Image 1 (cartoon, rainbow, N blue to C red):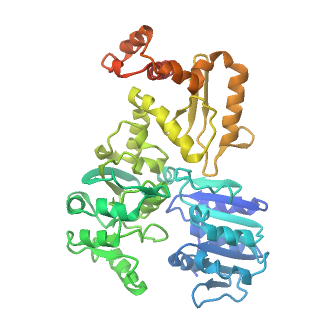
Image 2: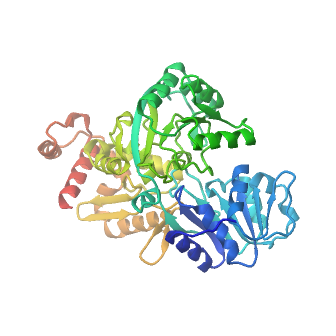
Length: 506
């Protein structure tokens, strides 16, 4: 058993968990901040039994090295026999949970809690009556439309990638994007992300594979991991990078361990995989990650990048290379690590080459320009459709950090970005985002009904289809003399003027 010395924030997280009463709680810790170490230490402070649920075999065994009490694995031919801590996959335990009394576990821990909305997790959770249900995840937002609010009551501890870097617990990131020549035009979506077979057909092509290899030789430094779409994609790229190795789902446990050891000892420099190293693998010496697997999933993207965020002696920063093509505007790319939405800006996806903090500042500035302001109406409607909120037709502006602004002459309010459970932190308590939208609408109707033409989208759209007024044209030309004013309608002109006046007043 190794000697565990907790970092300050890990002790704070552990104490927060122990102080909470019965309930379901979500803990968000960026990959590399040691969530496994935190939840394994709970066994030292509680008398009851603990169940750890994971979705992959590798994650079942990982926590055991940090636990110094009786422990067992429920997996395959392995069964528990009254041990204090049990670790199991959800697939296995879904077939065995009825062997345990409802109150057998004082605490149930769900590792990688973004998976917990799946039906198998729900069956296990509903069977037991633990004192605390704890979910640990690396992704803090709801960008993937994962409904965890039906499982957990509140988020009780958060430490983001940005926080980890600023406090010297995670590696800094240099972000780069390279156009490798694929097109995602005909790739349909399934459950919010690209269908794998169609994605493979679009990306696993000679032109793109050659560009990935060229990107590796031209830009990579140190130990490098390349994420691919499929096993076939892995092998096609490997042919173009002599000396590289592949780990895929068919690689045996023994061969996988040997390959990881050889990679760690720098016997070869490039490791190619198909979503094997998204969760639970500790390879801190990685200096370059090449994302050749396009995704719209913030969770998946964050997990891939997380493999390279750990610190390592002599490692100055992580080089993160996003491989993009045409129709790539809605891809998850480096800005999403800081909760920013790239497709809300006019920034071209293949023009990224900067430190992540500089990129973050640039994206925030880019969204604050006339072209992005006009696009914002569509972004709000997409948010409404994706998450199913009733926004009461209020003309909100969606900011790059996920917050909302409603403004018109004499009035301006900002609704903060909701957390992963859809809550907004008020002065004294948290509110559901839907409740905040409801309250804002009631306030507008009661206090600003005389200005409804300025905040109600239906009213705005009626007059907004007309050509801009002479006064609007005069105002816009005075601030943006080169702007194509005749491409605008009256509503779009109004958005430009309102945002310009807001910026002047700040």
